[in-house]
Figure 1 (cartoon, helix red, strand yellow):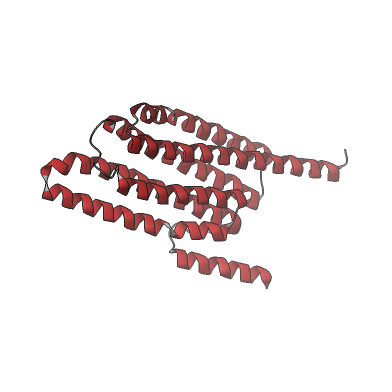
Figure 2: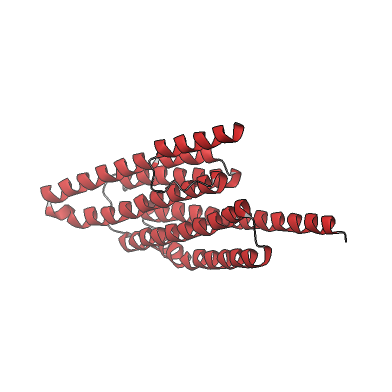
Length: 244
């Protein structure tokens, strides 16, 4: 095999390795997304068994993270990727870390759901939780979609939605504090709801993190400590420089 052919062969194999890695991340993300939906269902429907199943399945998320992380280490050691390809691998490592942490938050929701099964959820069946969970689930889903396409503009748009999640979370917290002050009999339920929505709010934070990693992979810009407006300005500046 000629050196040029060998280089092309190695490059093609490396690209295949990266695509397989990205596919595994999306499979992990899809499983985590499904776990989130099932945990909320267990809570709303008072299904103790489903809550237990979701909580016990967290070890599968952990195993996925370890396996993908090991494969990333192997690729770095064997392929010695260039800067742009290394960003992809680093972005994957960071993304699976946040997916694993989302799994931890889901486990908390599932365990509380299992414990609360059969208790009085009131007439609204945790309406406030369902609404926040919908926002967070959609945010996670769209963050994974942006990851699949490596679409930095979509990633930034999804990241902006974390503000709506935070606002909803804070409103629920204030509401539950008021309920506890008005009637001590509301304290137990209010505390449970506060723990659940805190876990859901953290899921939103991790989804936002994933969006920030996408920007890093695509543009080589670390925007974790920037406002989203400043991040967009930096990205536009980079695009202008490339065009010039």
